[in-house]
Length: 389
Length: 126
Image (tube, rainbow over all chains, first blue to last red; front, side):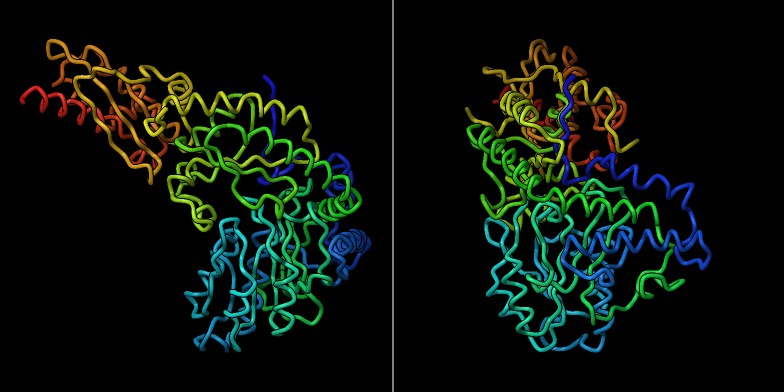
């Protein structure tokens, strides 16, 4: 059976070139990067090269890069690290932290936890495309606001937030700006200086690197409070022995991401627009997210009268790997908070499917999905008591 | 009980038995709510107090579709009283188990069947 992977936003395969780069660091260059001897120094040097590679992709200095275990930890460290430094502003008037309703759970749950600790958090609403309104943001700022955290590109519907405008506002009000760029990295050029970003989270396994490693960019001069105490690695902000193979893999992934940026973006955009064009004619289906302010690899549709998990499993039966925001596929049994935030009813949200493309996706993959999807939709609608035709 | 679907669930999901409507049904039962993501309608044809024919339509996840399918198979040809004894647990165990979090929301077939039988009896009494 033909197999088509269209779930690159969930995770990517590791690039062969990256695997080869990592391999010596398991059994040949295995020293602890904190050790003083030659073994350690060699690992240390490899981590510093990776730091440069990550920094280079973001137009940041290497010493502004903190290695973590992934996007979730980067979000936690960035947000809690800043919040704990600003504890005195708890229980004051106005919002301490401003974020949005459509953030990844790594940001949302972190903010909810901080609320329990006494911080005031504003969750900005979004429009039908998932965009925050920069005016709403500016109006929510008070003298006790110290952090804005708005994602770069949405992990579900792919909408790209107005990052440049947000950066201007936070700079004007002297507030820190954190962005979760886990989905956006590698799919659009990001320059932290041009965009006035102060903290930025990335993950390796979304850009053809290994799982279990990520980074947090922290602009020079910003102080964090650690959330994991220990040996004092990474400026004391992120204790833990350096995951040298992982860090080397992340570094290489960033290097390749930078080198291939233009090629990747045009390849992904072409396939994305082709897939959208192919799916659109199916009756009563609607594109979720913004038509143009959209991650280059994201396609997200909802279909009336069918349920997303069923659709996903039917695609799986045809060898196609996709993802859904349906409640039935989540163990919490709640419709996606992102789809509800853009104004869909739970019923509308249940019928959604996300197809995300990657470097190795082909025109052939798109054509295959386009050829089987209409029949699957038809089959499920024929079973559905909600489909009246 | 696992989080993964059993082979039997996947089989009934992909090849549902007794799918469709009965135009001149003797009893119809609908349960569920589109807001929750599951709606199920069961149609029955009754002869000599037995379920002579049964069909269903389901909007929902694989568990909802598979449990409707197997429930119709289990009660076809049974007397109404026998069919009324069908429980959610019977349906789930016949499917080789359902993920725990699917037991309540998606396993609605026994309820829909009961409603269809009640509908039939109500109509007959009138």
